[in-house]
Amino acid sequence: MSGNIKGIFYGVSTGPGDPELMTVKAVRILKKADSIVAARVMGKQETALEIAKQAVGLDDKEILSLPFSMSGKREAEKKEHENSIRQIEALLEAGKNVAMPVLGDVSVYATWQYLAEEIQADGYQTVMIPGVTSFCAAAAAANTGLTQRDLPLHIVPASYGNLEKQMQPEGNYVLMKAGKCMDEIHRVLETKPGVREVFSIKNCGLPGEVVKDGLLENEAYGYFTTVIVKE
Amino acid sequence: MSGNIKGIFYGVSTGPGDPELMTVKAVRILKKADSIVAARVMGKQETALEIAKQAVGLDDKEILSLPFSMSGKREAEKKEHENSIRQIEALLEAGKNVAMPVLGDVSVYATWQYLAEEIQADGYQTVMIPGVTSFCAAAAAANTGLTQRDLPLHIVPASYGNLEKQMQPEGNYVLMKAGKCMDEIHRVLETKPGVREVFSIKNCGLPGEVVKDGLLENEAYGYFTTVIVKE
Image (cartoon, rainbow over all chains, first blue to last red):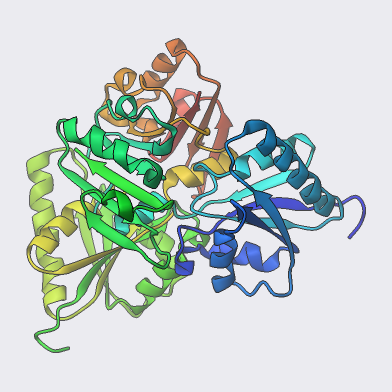
């Protein structure tokens, strides 16, 4: 490891939960990485790392466990990211290839983007390994297509509010992280015209998977709940 | 193979082109299938089968090559589908598991849905194996995220027209099959406020891949062109 050759920072999509839904490439990149970043989301979950471990032996790797507390407090999150970036860049500077397993696909609502933008700006190479999104896996679990011939598909981070407005354009909808706002989804769907089919998928590919025609009742939702709404 | 046990019809997502972007599960299902449906799209391309063949040896399999002429003429397409369904069901009836490789992900604008709905209605089991969508792979190729924190993502089948209206809601856009309507995309983007970044990705993961910041000029587009528009 020469001082001149810097490592690469990989965002490796692990898919939604089932380790068999990792791509052949994701498995290969994780196998050859020197260091693995484990995202300790909300203080405890290392879901993406757990998925990766089922597909790839990672016992011989250096594991860097970093907190992503997802508090929603921008300043605190920014400080946390800066601290994570400093630790990752120290490894890259030492010539190590660093892979961070990311739940679902790395281009869709993944915290990896915030890290990667800074790390790129600091002059390091970053590479994204695409994977299966939670919503494609949810559609497969519900045995339904997400799209119709000439209609758009809207991917909505449902828990960010303003759902009535978000669900106005024509087309089908994927409501992500729907578990946080199932009351609001119930309310919006009650008055929305043209809805033909609704599916709820909780913990897709994870232990405790639930697939339901229609909406889950409030008490049954969880953080990893996706709702599919078809016109 | 008892006369009573019917086969299963699998829609196996092959991802966008690079055979390494197939999932471990897709590879396993194709390996164990008795028969493979090759979609002969528009008279010649068997792109999904070609991807699958690079990852899995299929020489010992029965290959059923079926036409999907994509003429846009509903009646002709319907007749073609009915003919395909009849041939697939004959195999399922004989107890054979039939796998159809599908480009990208099987839940997103895949013809497989039309076949599967009928085949299910006729009493056979159908199973979807999710995969990497063309747009997630395009984002990775352009090294950019598709989403921002609290904004939706709109997946638009761009060639179906009415693009100005489709691009009104706030959020980011993926314009699929953009090659057919690059003139219109140029026109709509010229007057659309709030556009921060645009990427064009042609033949993602296939021979002749092009990744460009901004739009491709008209002469350079192709059927498999995806445009990413970020606010």
